[in-house]
Length: 611
View 1 (cartoon, rainbow, N blue to C red):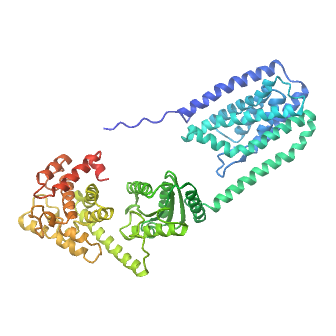
View 2 (cartoon, rainbow, N blue to C red):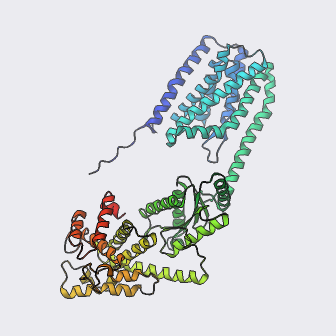
């Protein structure tokens, strides 16, 4: 019995690590605030100084109540409060700057209804940043106000320390709350706010110098401060407009315009660096049917689900052209891209998307410069691989090669469409056969998976393994003609009943005739032939039996032994393997049994073997 995982510990609704981090920030800030208030109380400012500090506090409050968003989501904001905080720290002293910064941010956040932990953290962060801004003035001994140059240098140094302290403290909270690396968040924070903070630093120096010359000259700051605010708004609107022009509204992925630009940039980068990249063109299988059957909201939900998976691919960049057409650019060779898509297909298969079952995708993969020398050729080769994947059963990825890159005519496409429809009908018949007995509901799918795994273990090529997968899926299609009384008999069959069952390979082969899936139909016909010639229907022996038929026989027997049947309970994989070994050389091909054993020893469990 598994023990449920313990719920993550929280404090005041915050993760424990984040709560401890905020407590550490307050452990530094609260003593600073207390000491500052004590110093002010012991040496109160003159009336003129108090009035000046009141003016700066008022300006700080207005600035804090009118922040400028730095991103489209409103998660990052910047205000010009630091202009006044730094000026006060240098001109009047840290004991005034620390309370001023704390009061300004605290009052604005209380007014906007922020939660107590966030208010406490921001008050502490502003207090620490304000003290950092005063450090150059403390080191210079207060002799910085007699000359404009020295005052300017002191203010700029204080502004730099103010920014660094601000970003260092804030990024720690972001990294803990979002589970990201601190360095990544810190670099992003400096990149996003660097320009604005640089401008505010120069404005802080201007503020301090104007105050020292004549307090009334602060009126001249109105123009630059308004310009800064307008600049930030304009820059934000430009970023939002540029993002929207290159983003698909439904999925959040890049649109066709972004895709074309990114593809050309990748090619230019590959030409410079010599590193390959892969283009994966992806379609959602039977997407029109999903929309028609379950409605467009369901279709949109599935598109978003697939897009989210694609967007999370390491070193990948995903796009949506429209409809169900998606693309993924991966900074790797075609084999690595293929493995990523296999992982995505497996993840999709594990979660039912509609009442009819999981969503599947088909993909074509081509690599630059291996498969193409320019943009158009790369897209053409990837599209050819996608067409091959869709024409050969869907729910698969195809690596481009000369054998699959042919251009199909309209007649070819028509024939492939008809063939695919017939193949789907045959697959549905198999599902119907399995569903007639709940104990064998997934039998054909399991045999399909196991047969493909044995083929891969024997070193068969990819195309043959794919055909083996199909043969395993279709091997029992002939049982559609058997009565339920035989299929579900809770006993061993009589001689007459067994004779009826022995006809199902021939019937199955006849049902597959004309589907254009040769040699799979022949493999289905002979999947009950025995190594010693005692099988049916042809009494073939040894190498006369197609290798694929021998593989399906072993996979079929193993799955049957390890599953419940009306006349006996399921046996363990070890018992099943022992049974196969005992009949190797008579009923089964010894090499195939050995390959199954090697494959099972390479996986952690039988469930993994059939995953």
